[in-house]
Length: 625
Image (cartoon, rainbow, N blue to C red; front, side, top):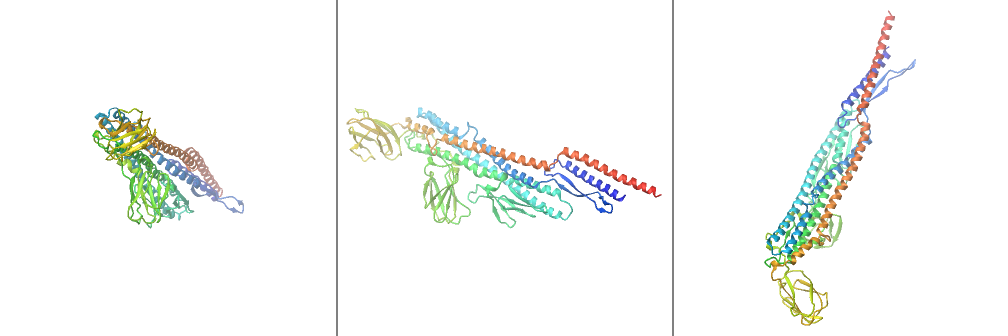
């Protein structure tokens, strides 16, 4: 009777444990990180003289329904999805910033060029001149404001990075604490299932911030490293992530792992993963690319208009002054430099500037200059050197081997953009000289083009060409040297005193041509026409300003679309991995309800076994008297 009673009692205990476990599953169906439990049963039995009968059932343990591979796959894909989502979301904001064609930099440039149409038609009209100055100020202010908005987007990303570092450190510290608790719980019977659930959830949370590889030891504790192998959690010891300024460019941020002994291990951005990697790529690469393209465009516009201003006369007959100012390029040394060199950078030719900053390196014998936008390296034996529209020079001191210097060029131009002309009369609409053929000429000599290379002391001096024959002429006037016997041919170019003209036609003996100062600069529109023509001129590294602006919009759109597509793909992969993990480890309430009924019936059946044993025992007592 006692064996039957024991069998029924063990069956009832097993059914009760299963009912408890199922109830726990139902209660935690919506608990984040909860892994479904199941009771592990083993038969309790032994052989005796009457053969193998058995002694019921034993509850061995309550285990988690868990697949380590699926958990790792979910965590890894979560890291990729978080990285792509963070960068895609940031790029969407960048795309929106450039998305309004009516308020963009391209529209502002169009308005500036259009304003010159009215000046060309009415060069002496103060209202037309004022409109040009207003449009120039609008363009400069819009460029400066746009650069400021780009910096705000970068600062916002850096702020989010700081928050993500704090979140990651909480997860790292939590995993170390869980390891200690698991280690303490290992002396007790059974698995610490709740702690293991917390361990896996924290690992998933950490992967949302940064890609983390995990090794689960036999005792349930976890060792966590970064993708490149930097230790994050070892036993009960946790490292910390630290956001630090880039040693070459303090405006950028990098992430390092700080060990307990204070040792800093810089992380490779390309292997970081998670939200931190997405935000870092946006802040350190995407924003600089946009700022570089905006800066190159602004510097090209400023350079082209300033150059044309310098070749014209304003309403008072004075040589034109610069129309725009842009931020100057700067050179700064890396924090680890040991030399005392001071480099300088100036814009040599705005028309060929690249949309990039540069890094100067020194290996002890020669210099290397890396264009940061595409990684192109150019080596130089000495300084100064001129390339990509910049002139780099060593101002003072001596660099040491392995010293590095950051040249900020394209990313500084727009921030300092401003309009310089304050009076409409200062707009240089006139050319400094005019040409006039002699009234008594009998040939058909004509000037087909006149341009100015520079304005000097003798540019406006009167110069007279006198043809001594159909194919020869002499020149008289200040600054010319009064040459004689010069050969003439149709289409020839003649240059003196900073001006250049192209001659054509067939002159007769005695014909003359005079070059003299413009008599009424306020009414001359020839330089204004030249400035209007800058709207369609290739002044921005071989392309028009509008063409470069369209290229900028296209680049941002392509980055945004690419990040969006990548984000959609990585999110689908994460959803699939999480679905597979949930199908195994998650709680299905319909299945749990069915199990609840099954275990309830088992409990009732076990109770009947005990009741039968009691009835048999009572019958035996009655039979024994």
